[in-house]
Image 1 (cartoon, rainbow, N blue to C red):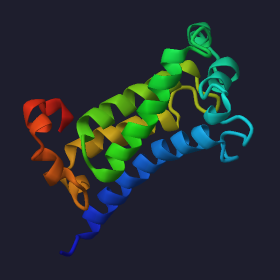
Image 2 (image 1 turned 90 degrees about the vertical axis):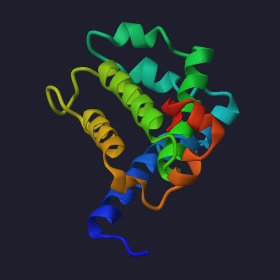
Image 3 (image 1 turned 45 degrees about the horizontal axis):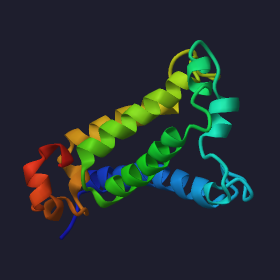
Length: 163
């Protein structure tokens, strides 16, 4: 089972994007001291979205996003989203739903900080969206994954959106 160089790049890109989401989940859950201070973890009762929504938003849509601060539903949706998107991408299962929901999350984060500070339009959020969309269109990204096994599951066969 040998891979072409191009396939390795696609697999690494898929796993790398998954790790971005999964790491954000673990850092916010445990307060690993990177993006989230050790005494600010979700397990310590601190909102995983409050810091960004309260202090990180700016621009014409800031008020909308700031009004979501410490919303129970938003916190859970955000954390479960980070976990499931990250795991899906790393394992190579549910790529479409993971990529589209990840793109939506990233777009909302971009919108919350529009216009970006270092560029009038484009920042990493939009680039990541492009990467996620391209991953769904490239079969090489499914190498070294559980995609074939996932596709055989009854629920996936019944609901193709889970593919």
